[in-house]
Length: 183
Image 1 (cartoon, rainbow, N blue to C red):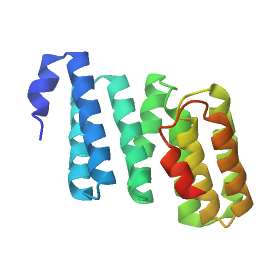
Image 2 (cartoon, rainbow, N blue to C red; image 1 turned 120 degrees about the horizontal axis):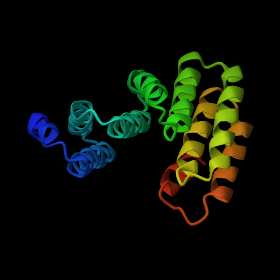
Image 3 (cartoon, rainbow, N blue to C red; image 1 turned 60 degrees about the vertical axis):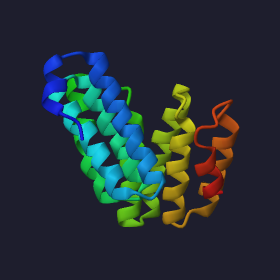
């Protein structure tokens, strides 16, 4: 547990960003290890600090990463709870860097909640736009998209998206385990 007040009071963006990042990655490690309660607590600590520092970029990053961890836990309710303020915060502060990823996550939630295969097409457009950006997290978004396709019963779309993910990942191998799991 971190002392959010004293860290925020220091007003040092490098220290707070480092601590936010450390807690998010600790949360990821705990979640992957099956220690969901501890992982969620670490993520909440990171979010508390991000809110307390009042640095728009820190909060956008923390909300985006926390929402991705909610996707990894396959928790659409928590994902929507985090993505909604993330998108609003990005719009309010003109921080477009996380927007496409959060839109993909929100599309994933929509598909899981409705099971409607028609929701796939708007989601595909967001993923394709993100792919064109050349961002290194393209394969992560391709992991979210085929998962949504499977949940909507669109298996051919899921297979095609996975093929594209493997074809476009370049030397990035960070999300290969997820891509192989989905395949």
